[in-house]
Image (cartoon, rainbow, N blue to C red; front, side):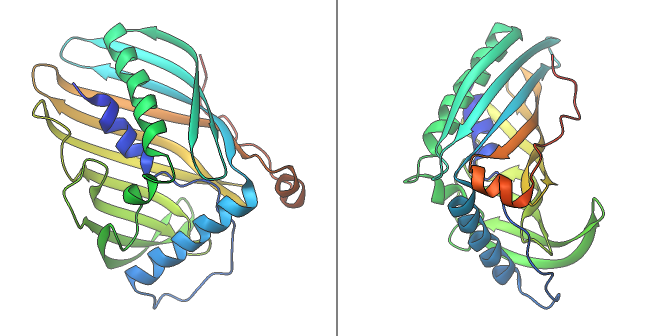
Length: 248
């Protein structure tokens, strides 16, 4: 079973710190919004100097009533290459092995030579503007995205882009291609929240229909994310993401 590819694919598109800007009008096309989002992402990489944070993974297999949990520290370089350190793990060994392999896969596909093929850009997706919606008290552009190729690191679904900051606020959908015969479908949601002047991953949920194993759910909660750059933290008076979930 290649759960490691599934989870790495979901994380690959994850937005990291992006700074706020003046709110635009609402006459932009989907491609224009995505282009601005990509530009702000590059700005983040220059200003923040990478980031650090903590994740809590919870894996649930319903057919066999199995659970696995892993706490992981993450450090991201300015070029977005990610490094992981497992702090603790408990529960189902098979599930924990799948989670560890997912971290290895994510680290590999976060390399600068690979990462561009996983991002939400016009090179990877065709897009259509649906409109605007209120999301967590903020206005967001709602855009449908269709992958331009069948790839396990891309998805078919919808994104919400914050209309003021041009930051990815939410994404949901289904993998464009399942990673193996054993995986029937993979559906997911990914949410981001603003902390100070930056946006960080907040919560990811996914459900995989796996032959022989049935439905397997993975929930990832993200804590205490902050940029590495001391100068940026000082200028923006940024506080780390509040840990609103109980850590074990």
